[in-house]
Image (tube, rainbow, N blue to C red; front, side, top):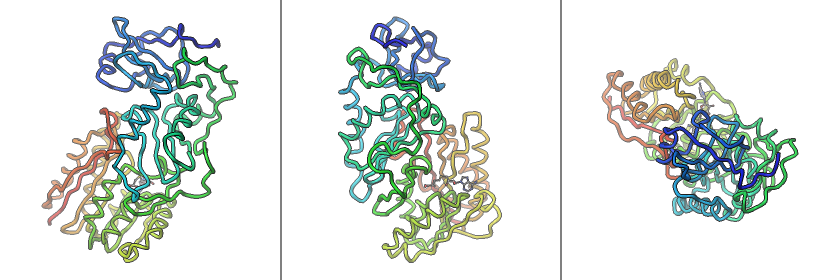
Length: 428
Ligand code: SAH
């Protein structure tokens, strides 16, 4: 392939509907919306989209490996995407979080993908470890420059790379074709990759020493471990922080069930809040071992030391249905029950069923904390499903509150709204 020059910059035209979406700030252009392109595009290069009148509409990252063909970086007036632009975009993400966290909380999200203007790109901090997670292979050719930028702006001891499952094979084999963050006309592109691929692996340490075990960080003064190399997401469900804090305030004197507990995040907070007992229920033995270690890490809090902690390894749907045990506070935070849009209705029924089962395990006065992380299930429909389960139980209940995205996980467009939690208290 010849060197890409400004004259042959990738230019696209898209459908009218896609144009309208991009104009209104939507960050994705799907492959079937692309109507014309001047040539085949390469992964990670900048694609410029022109509108019907041949005016600049937007510029984004081209991704031939994904149905999301272009992830918009900028829409509106023509804009040069150069090193200064990238730096200012990083500064914007950091500024958004300024003042949100004190020294008691050293684990949080620094860059939340599209909603921070970094499509398909997540950066989490776990104390001195940064975890960079990519959801599109289009970032791979730009990785070196991104790292230089991050290291210059964010003090850290190491940076770990995580790759979403669907790009892992591309990352190992993708050729290294676009190496500059900068506009191609300003900096001569380097020769094309040798075709042997980027050789990037999920869990690879990009900078600093590879952690030999889980990384420890703090959240609201509670210490947690995160398996940043292999754990789900980037090692911890940072997005539930505000709900964990809420659960701490509700837990005093209660017997707590944390179903789909993962590493016991909600549980340690409940224990510190004065729960008498906490039961962690998860299908994964690794998750439960981690929950046990997280309890041990916080024995310095008298309330955590005093709390009875048990773990149950089981399918939560079955266990909750069959167990005769009663609880005074139940957290039900399952994995996504709708992986695609067509599964929406089935997921809504599954949420109703799961919460109906949970309500049966609640003692009078008990509190249900029902969560959903399915982007394909809108918040209103999820809340209604939980309320239906409560109404059908025939018990008296009141709704305490609903919560959605925390400030370090902003949701800037509809598809980004995945997190929702509703709190119901059963008075009978
Ligand atoms: N509430 C957790 C995150 C939950 S992630 C937190 O805030 O940290 C979903 C968890 O559900 C994972 O730990 C996974 O192992 C577990 N899981 C998935 N399917 C399950 C099932 N059928 N029964 C019990 N646990 C399950």
